[in-house]
Length: 114
Image (cartoon, rainbow, N blue to C red; front, side, top):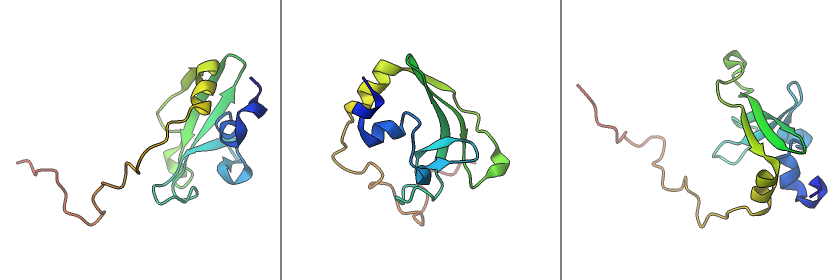
């Protein structure tokens, strides 16, 4: 399967992000955005490396906190055929899973411990 057969979102997740979703200094791709819906608001970036056999996510970082450096997660390697299949068969959620979260100013439901 050619990358061009997968469409724009698939191309993005194969490491070919548009300039607005790419962190140019590290050649990383935004893979997670803020729940507010604005990608530039606290994105999570990772370097996506695609070979004919695998797709690897590595070097995770948050650009608004450069002092954090590279985050201690990953790398994650996926067999490319399985990865491409997942990109072409995206699950659509019936509703926003974050919709049921309490508002930020709500009292905590975590019980205090003594």
